[in-house]
Amino acid sequence: MSDGTEVEAKWDRAARVRAVVFDHHSAQRRAQQITGDDRRELRTTGLVPHSATDSQRWERMFAYLDRSLADEGTEPLILAELERHALTVTLAAFPTTFTESLRRPAQRAGAPATVRRALAYIDANAHLAITIDDVAAASFISTRGLQYAFRRALDITPADAVRRARLDGAHRDLRAGDGRSVGEIARRWGFSNSSRFVAAYREAYGATPHLPPL
Image 1 (cartoon, helix red, strand yellow):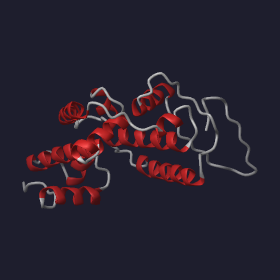
Image 2: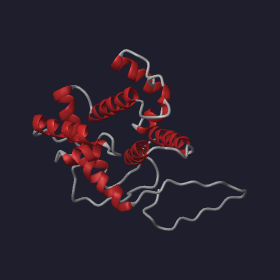
Image 3: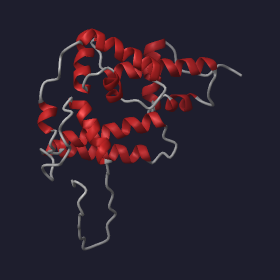
Image 4: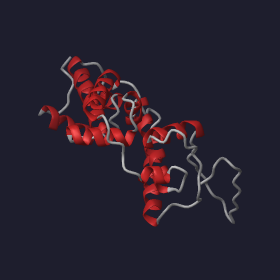
């Protein structure tokens, strides 16, 4: 874990070294949006994870990221979620200046109007590479505050709402035959796992996703 300073390492034998590198400005902006702590600067305050559990969680994230990025055809919606997932796991696992902010209770004001604003934004932008942080910013609330507002008002998460909107988009494209395959349409709408997409589609629409016959 480094704040951009030079890192030196030595091995007795050959080694393949890989690293996750975040743009500092983008990472700080996202950390501020997640926590609602707009004045804090993102810096690391320790070089090792908080616990063995955090270390294992980060390693699983890295392995998942590595497998997902091996697919050169990864769609923008999927890439945006992978980027957010990598950063949020890293922020949770390692000590930073945002650690305490992440542990504080979420803001709880203005839920109904905030939720309506968020849903309208999701409906208008689900086809773009937006994340729940973008939804929260458009709703003038922190990400954690928006998560609380959704849970209180709708008993779902903002991520659930984004997935439902994208599932609706995939459903429309399938009915219109707008794609070469079910898998292509699923990836276009941010569903990288085909079996999960099929299960979610079947639960929502009571049928297996398919393209109309030619």
